[in-house]
Image 1 (cartoon, rainbow, N blue to C red):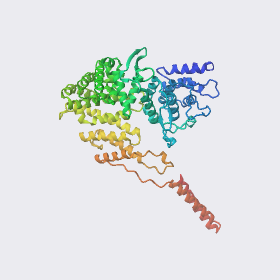
Image 2: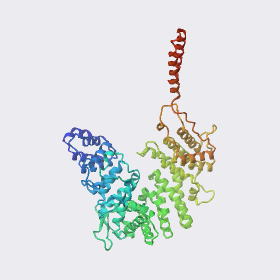
Image 3: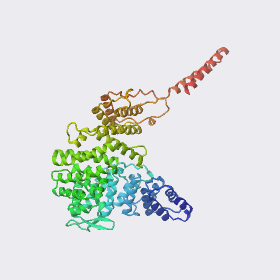
Image 4: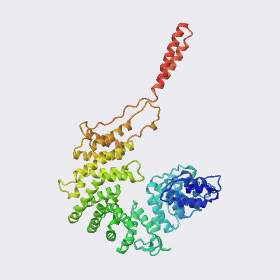
Length: 632
């Protein structure tokens, strides 16, 4: 209805009206693409006077990213306006368009990465604009253009813009890994820039700027200031440094610390630890953070160096603050907390970690329905790992958690088939069943029987209920078979699934081949048969078809094929072998060509005699008929 109304009054709408309508429309719970298509067609029309300007281009990109609608027409037009690719060649190699602000550059980076449209030229221009006056320079003479490196030159950028850029970079780590220096959209290549950065170079550039900018602040003495939009962090300057104290949003600083903690550079990890100590170094500070952000600080603590006594004390303050939260609020973040606890276990934190786990385990077991399939697997696996570590370090704490972990294990195994079915039905992003990662992770977890036994005190003979475990394996075999067939060519996930079912099959004595007298095949036989079908399909050679090799199935990776071959041999299964590929070119066409040659040769000899001519003509006709039949 809104799209029809916009079309009806389209001639009276300005570009600002269309962008504002797209912004409001993208914030609705259910977004259809009709109105967004109308706005994009008008604003990208070269013959329409209603054109985008840089400010409107950044805003409408944000609207399409919020609606998760990747429309190439609109994305290319917005890039053209934002990067100013129609301008004349710039006089200096590093002159960039200054018609967008640093905040708009960060917003454009966030929108493009969310839409999966981030490429080298856009990354280079927008990063340099956001972190100006940083520049891409050649490190020293003798380096080729492809060996240029990123360096920071001149004064540092504003702290709030820098932390916003780090916040984007942390959320786009997977997207940055896919950005190469080759720009597929050649019309968007920056003229005069001379070099387009890869995603890895862009990430290192952001880290180098962050390292130098935050180096003048005493991050371990930051202060939390409440505001209408939430907490803000005040960072005081170090003695002897010029400038103003830094003020930044708390979530931006937290994501900056999470980005630094993932850096391989030791100085970045130390900087992340300093921010962590300043943010949660006292009990009052740790308690002021919202629960979701407290859990994210745990992730920073796990990845940071906790050798300092002050860092260990900060971890205890944070764990105590989380344990004081209401139990029902802990359930949605239970998986993230459980994953962090085994890594935080140390000599002085054992009692605090056990206290938090004792509060979290009953809540996760009683409200297990609130956990997703992935969260349930992570919670169970991490709680079992924690119990095993506690049994090695402090037996009394392990005895306290053992019955609670046992209940969580039994509930998880019993509810696994129902949770798989509900996730397949109600998850919007999964129209073809469960994801490979979920099926693989649950299969690998249940195949570690020695880890499951930890929930029963590690005693010999103690084990999870056999009936519930068998039902879980039967359901997982169906899900694994669907994943293998859907994937097509065998992959690492295929090998991991077969390995986990083979491990459990050897423990339970499952048959790897379905026999006629069995009512239903074993889970191992179901998965093994699916792997065999996928493997045979991948190596089949259909040489009689007129197809190029690019139309054939992808070749199986060497490590995957080696593992599959080893498992098949161990289980006594027949290993599929590829048939010999026929010579290039259809044999039928070669037969047809020889028949045509024979026919022309016979007809040329018809002038010798009338009887011979008739005979030759008949023979040629017969051969020609056979040739056409062979061609068909």
